[in-house]
Length: 447
Image 1: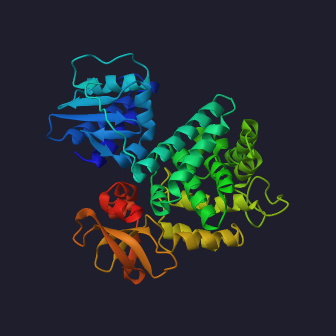
Image 2: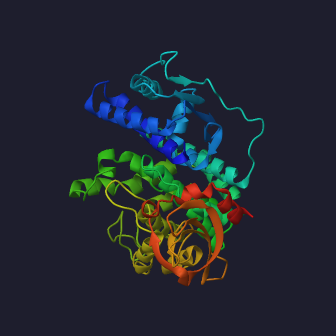
Image 3: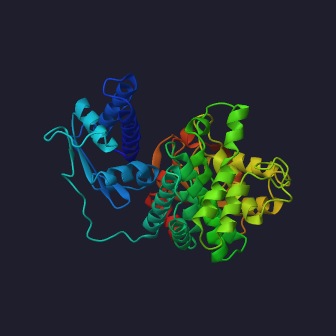
C-alpha cells in the first residue's frame, strides 16, 4: 500500500460522492464512478486483509503512517469526512461494491448510516496521538490547510449571497507568513501542491504564498505583506458569481461567455469592500486589477485604465500567470516552470511590470524550486533552492536513478550546466509536493 494508491482512492471517492449526490444507484454515471472506486480500493488493499485510513486534525494516516502530501492535495474530502464525524475508515478485503456505494452515499449526506458488519466500517480504529507534531514541516502543512479552510468559508458565504469574514482570511495569511519566513525554500516547494477538483482554492493559496515570498524578496514589511497576501488569496473570489459551465469550459469561450467571465474582478472587489476590515481597499484593488496589464490593456477596462495597475496588483499578476501555466487544467496540459518564466519574461514591459518580472525571476532562478531536471547522467533531480547570489549552482535532490529507479531523495549541489532537460511530473514519474514530505528533502530545506 502506498501514498499514491491512497490518493487515487480518495480521488475516486470524491468523484463517487459527487455522482451519488446527483444521480441514483444504477445510473450510468454512478455505475462508472463506482467501478473506478472499486478498482482503486482493491489497488489500495492489494493482498492485505485490511487497510485503515484515519484522520487526525489536518492529516490522513494509512495504517498509522502519515500521508503528508495526500493530506494537502485531498484536504477537501478530509474536511467532508470530518463534517460527517468520520475519523477512520476500515476497508476489509475484498470490499463489497454495495458497501462502497453506501459509504459514498453517507459521506455525500444522502444516507444516514451504513450497514453494520459490512466490509467497510467507520470509526473502529481511530488514531489518537498523545503529542502534536510541532515540526516546521507540519506547521507549514497546518497553515496551508487553514488557508484552504478560510477560502472555502469565504466562497461558501459568497455563494449564499452573504458577506464573508475578512478576519479569517487575514489570520490565515498571517499564519502562512509567520511559518514561512524562516523556511522560504520549503514554502515555495509547497506551492507545487495542486488539486484538479479544487483548482481555484489551491491556485489562490499558492499565489498567496509566492506573493508573500516576492514581497519579502523586494523588501516589503509585514503589514504590507499581509495586504498583498490577502489580495492574492482573494483575487479570484469573484468567480463565485460566474457559472461553473463557463469556468470549466473546455474550449474557447463565446463572446457572451467571455463577457460574463470578465465580470469576476469587479465582483471580487465589491465583495471584499463589503467584507470590510483594515486597509481592505488595497486588497480589493488587487482583486480588481489582477488581469490589468502594465500597458493599460487587460480587463476590466479594455484600455480604459488611467495608468498602470497598483504596484501590489502588478506583483500579484506576474505570479498569477506563472502559477496558472504550471497547473494542469481540464482543457490544457501544465507547462514547466521554465516555460512559465519564459512567458512572463516575454511579457515584461507590456503585460507585466518589468521591475516585478526582474525580481520574480531573480527570486525563482532559471530553474525554480520544484523543477524536475534530467541530468547529463540520466538521473532525475528536483530543485529545492538556489544558493543566494549563485546563478551557476542549485540545491537539489536526486529522486530517480539513471536506470529509472525511484529512490529516497539524495541531496546534491548541482551545477546548472549539467541539466539537459526539464520534465513535467507525469513525464518524470515524480510529484514534487510528494518529495517534500520525505526526509532527504526536509533535511535540505529546514536544516
